[in-house]
Length: 194
Image 1 (tube, rainbow, N blue to C red):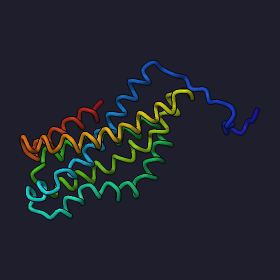
Image 2 (image 1 turned 60 degrees about the vertical axis):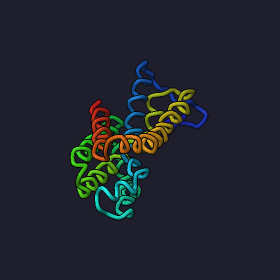
Image 3 (image 1 turned 90 degrees about the vertical axis):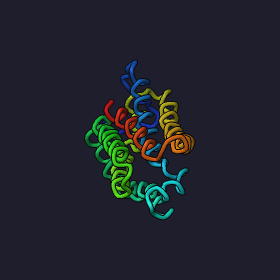
């Protein structure tokens, strides 16, 4: 038996499981989906958004592009926070940033500058949520459920993207861009507060 504290690849880790781990996974998945929804929401309405804000298509593209730039910068610090302070603090930071800036974006939806600032705030929250997927699966689920937990959490990424691409044009067609952003902001704030 090794005493180095390093787990052998042949010895399964012992995880104390709780019945509510699946409920926690669902809440985590909602946080992931909300963040992705907020990220992609301008992609299917680029032309409408450019006309609404009086900017070019590139400026609307920037609203999504900032997520990739911010992820590169914040990913390692976010992972460090998750590893150092735990899942609850790390994911909590991401969920709160997503909720607060998602709601701010909805409330100030008529102003491109505030929407961009809000997108940056949401983008800062993204790695705090996405980088915790493996950690949550490893901490909360036994070995025989980890792939399922990881797969479900990863699936939430695409559920959020699909929702943003499919639902945003319908809301904008029936109402307006500010209405869509406010609806998404309220949803993200509710999830971020849970």
